[in-house]
Image 1 (tube, rainbow, N blue to C red):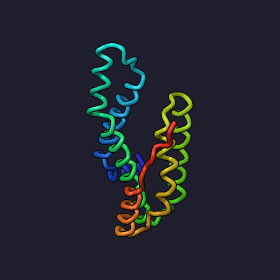
Image 2: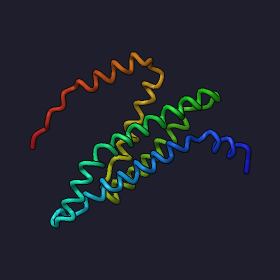
Image 3: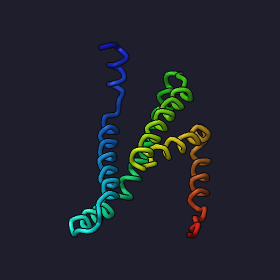
Image 4: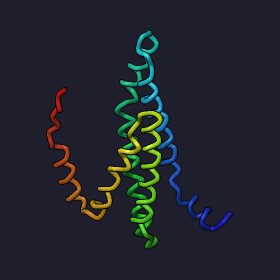
Length: 149
Protein backbone atom coordinates (compact mmCIF):
# COMPACT_ATOMS: atom_id res chain seq x y z
CA UNK A 1 0.00 0.00 0.00
CA UNK A 2 1.49 3.36 -0.99
CA UNK A 3 1.86 6.37 1.30
CA UNK A 4 -0.75 8.30 -0.72
CA UNK A 5 -3.30 5.53 -0.26
CA UNK A 6 -2.73 5.40 3.49
CA UNK A 7 -2.89 9.20 3.80
CA UNK A 8 -6.05 9.48 1.73
CA UNK A 9 -7.78 6.73 3.74
CA UNK A 10 -6.73 8.35 6.99
CA UNK A 11 -8.04 11.74 5.82
CA UNK A 12 -11.30 10.32 4.53
CA UNK A 13 -14.42 11.24 6.46
CA UNK A 14 -16.09 7.85 6.75
CA UNK A 15 -19.23 9.31 8.28
CA UNK A 16 -19.82 11.14 4.98
CA UNK A 17 -19.53 7.84 3.12
CA UNK A 18 -22.14 6.35 5.44
CA UNK A 19 -24.43 9.35 4.98
CA UNK A 20 -23.99 9.18 1.20
CA UNK A 21 -24.95 5.50 1.30
CA UNK A 22 -28.05 6.27 3.35
CA UNK A 23 -28.96 9.07 0.94
CA UNK A 24 -28.54 6.75 -2.05
CA UNK A 25 -30.71 4.08 -0.45
CA UNK A 26 -33.35 6.70 0.28
CA UNK A 27 -33.20 7.95 -3.31
CA UNK A 28 -33.58 4.35 -4.49
CA UNK A 29 -36.85 4.07 -2.55
CA UNK A 30 -38.02 7.42 -3.93
CA UNK A 31 -37.28 6.46 -7.53
CA UNK A 32 -38.62 2.92 -7.08
CA UNK A 33 -41.95 4.37 -5.95
CA UNK A 34 -42.28 6.06 -9.33
CA UNK A 35 -42.48 2.64 -10.96
CA UNK A 36 -45.10 1.17 -8.66
CA UNK A 37 -48.47 0.84 -10.30
CA UNK A 38 -50.41 2.56 -7.53
CA UNK A 39 -53.31 0.18 -8.09
CA UNK A 40 -53.16 -2.13 -5.10
CA UNK A 41 -53.31 -1.26 -1.44
CA UNK A 42 -49.66 -2.32 -0.92
CA UNK A 43 -48.56 0.09 -3.66
CA UNK A 44 -50.58 2.90 -2.15
CA UNK A 45 -49.13 2.24 1.30
CA UNK A 46 -45.60 2.10 -0.14
CA UNK A 47 -46.08 5.37 -2.02
CA UNK A 48 -47.51 7.04 1.09
CA UNK A 49 -44.60 5.88 3.25
CA UNK A 50 -42.06 7.05 0.67
CA UNK A 51 -43.79 10.39 0.30
CA UNK A 52 -44.02 10.89 4.06
CA UNK A 53 -40.60 9.64 5.19
CA UNK A 54 -38.26 9.63 2.19
CA UNK A 55 -39.02 11.98 -0.68
CA UNK A 56 -38.18 15.51 0.43
CA UNK A 57 -35.80 14.40 3.16
CA UNK A 58 -33.48 12.43 0.94
CA UNK A 59 -33.44 15.00 -1.85
CA UNK A 60 -32.36 17.53 0.78
CA UNK A 61 -29.81 15.16 2.30
CA UNK A 62 -28.36 14.44 -1.13
CA UNK A 63 -28.06 18.18 -1.87
CA UNK A 64 -26.41 18.96 1.46
CA UNK A 65 -23.89 16.15 1.00
CA UNK A 66 -23.07 17.50 -2.47
CA UNK A 67 -22.31 20.90 -0.96
CA UNK A 68 -20.27 19.40 1.88
CA UNK A 69 -18.24 17.42 -0.64
CA UNK A 70 -17.56 20.60 -2.60
CA UNK A 71 -16.42 22.44 0.55
CA UNK A 72 -14.14 19.58 1.63
CA UNK A 73 -12.54 19.35 -1.81
CA UNK A 74 -11.92 23.11 -1.83
CA UNK A 75 -10.42 23.22 1.67
CA UNK A 76 -8.14 20.26 1.04
CA UNK A 77 -6.93 21.66 -2.28
CA UNK A 78 -6.22 25.01 -0.61
CA UNK A 79 -4.35 23.28 2.25
CA UNK A 80 -2.02 21.42 -0.07
CA UNK A 81 -1.81 24.16 -2.69
CA UNK A 82 -3.39 21.88 -5.28
CA UNK A 83 -5.20 22.60 -8.50
CA UNK A 84 -8.80 22.67 -7.43
CA UNK A 85 -10.58 23.88 -10.58
CA UNK A 86 -9.13 21.28 -12.95
CA UNK A 87 -9.87 18.39 -10.56
CA UNK A 88 -13.33 19.72 -9.77
CA UNK A 89 -14.24 20.10 -13.46
CA UNK A 90 -13.06 16.54 -14.08
CA UNK A 91 -15.33 15.30 -11.28
CA UNK A 92 -18.27 17.40 -12.48
CA UNK A 93 -17.69 16.07 -16.01
CA UNK A 94 -17.73 12.49 -14.71
CA UNK A 95 -20.92 13.22 -12.78
CA UNK A 96 -22.45 14.65 -15.97
CA UNK A 97 -21.59 11.46 -17.89
CA UNK A 98 -23.32 9.35 -15.24
CA UNK A 99 -26.16 11.87 -15.32
CA UNK A 100 -26.61 11.41 -19.07
CA UNK A 101 -26.59 7.64 -18.63
CA UNK A 102 -29.17 7.81 -15.81
CA UNK A 103 -31.34 10.15 -17.86
CA UNK A 104 -31.12 7.98 -21.00
CA UNK A 105 -31.64 4.63 -19.26
CA UNK A 106 -33.97 5.47 -16.39
CA UNK A 107 -35.33 8.96 -16.99
CA UNK A 108 -33.71 10.31 -13.80
CA UNK A 109 -32.06 13.67 -14.24
CA UNK A 110 -30.87 14.41 -10.69
CA UNK A 111 -27.19 13.64 -11.37
CA UNK A 112 -27.15 15.77 -14.49
CA UNK A 113 -28.82 18.57 -12.55
CA UNK A 114 -26.13 18.38 -9.86
CA UNK A 115 -23.43 18.48 -12.52
CA UNK A 116 -24.94 21.59 -14.10
CA UNK A 117 -25.54 23.36 -10.78
CA UNK A 118 -22.07 22.39 -9.60
CA UNK A 119 -20.55 24.80 -12.10
CA UNK A 120 -21.83 28.03 -10.44
CA UNK A 121 -20.18 26.87 -7.21
CA UNK A 122 -16.87 27.74 -8.83
CA UNK A 123 -18.01 31.36 -9.10
CA UNK A 124 -19.12 31.70 -5.46
CA UNK A 125 -16.43 29.57 -3.84
CA UNK A 126 -14.44 32.57 -2.58
CA UNK A 127 -17.42 34.66 -1.46
CA UNK A 128 -17.68 35.72 2.15
CA UNK A 129 -20.33 34.25 4.43
CA UNK A 130 -22.18 37.57 4.25
CA UNK A 131 -22.26 37.49 0.45
CA UNK A 132 -23.44 33.88 0.47
CA UNK A 133 -26.23 34.65 2.94
CA UNK A 134 -27.39 37.61 0.84
CA UNK A 135 -27.35 35.43 -2.29
CA UNK A 136 -29.25 32.65 -0.49
CA UNK A 137 -31.92 35.07 0.75
CA UNK A 138 -32.22 36.60 -2.71
CA UNK A 139 -32.59 33.17 -4.33
CA UNK A 140 -35.13 32.03 -1.72
CA UNK A 141 -37.20 35.18 -2.17
CA UNK A 142 -37.65 34.74 -5.92
CA UNK A 143 -41.26 33.87 -6.60
CA UNK A 144 -41.82 30.68 -8.52
CA UNK A 145 -44.81 30.98 -10.77
CA UNK A 146 -46.43 28.03 -12.52
CA UNK A 147 -45.90 27.98 -16.25
CA UNK A 148 -49.39 26.75 -16.95
CA UNK A 149 -50.46 23.96 -19.25
